[in-house]
Length: 241
Ligand code: SAH
Image (cartoon, rainbow, N blue to C red):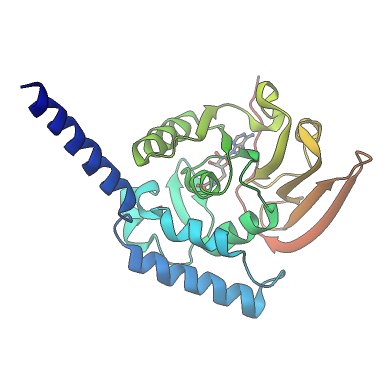
């Protein structure tokens, strides 16, 4: 009896392991998406080739599971997609570029502002130790949190709230990525970035006149900023309290 139970448990464990090894469905489409990203980067990208590990992470994450059902069929085209609540998910090339600019290491702890669908967080989770991500629209935070858990991305922590003020309890962060358009770089995020740390953030006066900006906090604590590319993003809004 005991042996049979043990065999069943072992079998279940093996099946789970096998399921985790198997790529998510639609991997051919993801391969094609990554090829498209690599081509755009090489031919017209502002910084040239995208890091191999970033492309590999994007080859793995099932974007179609994280976006709403109505747009699933188009999940692997290089398109911005609606995710409900008037919000959108960036086109895969922009996700790749922002992730590449962030220049992550495996040991990093990263803060993301604007969880949205959870896609960017899932991509980052493949590349770093821990991702903390904040979403101001509560139902989006809940949906992303559930989906990420179900997909097995256990190193992502989602919180509903106003990301402008960062997440002091987990600061300082090695890297910060803001995926909504800001009129300026929020001071709390600067404060919560480690010295030597990097932040990627779209900055500008209106949603369609933003500059994707790479920010580095230098050894002296000063900021070095570099405009990388004009982009369009939904705005970073503030909680009305
Ligand atoms: N990174 C997301 C897409 C982000 S869209 C993805 O991969 O799917 C931008 C998101 O930022 C929206 O969901 C919007 O609700 C959220 N947002 C806007 N202002 C915010 C704020 N102050 N704090 C946290 N999230 C915010």
